[in-house]
Image (cartoon, rainbow, N blue to C red; front, side):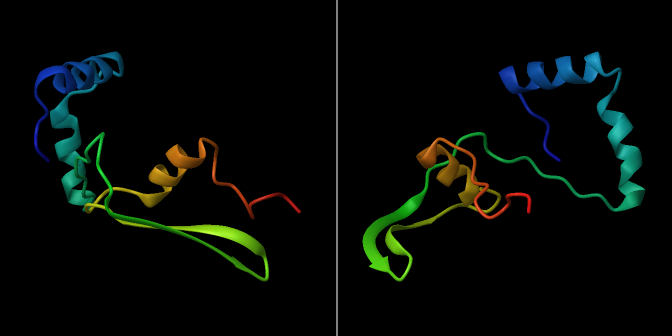
Length: 92
């Protein structure tokens, strides 16, 4: 995995030091076939579109967008809704 630089490197070094870890400690995990990658902290949705409509469940808004690999649509929707997306996960 690529090494961070600047402020990101300082934050990461602080976290590792707090946990008494070194980056070399993670190299030992290579034999476990664990793969990791860095993801951008910010990203921009592309090809944005919105339509409204209605069906048997009532009115709705349909959002369409594309994201770069490693970015999550649930994060975009969470920012738009400003609440957690837990509908349908209620305890029975």
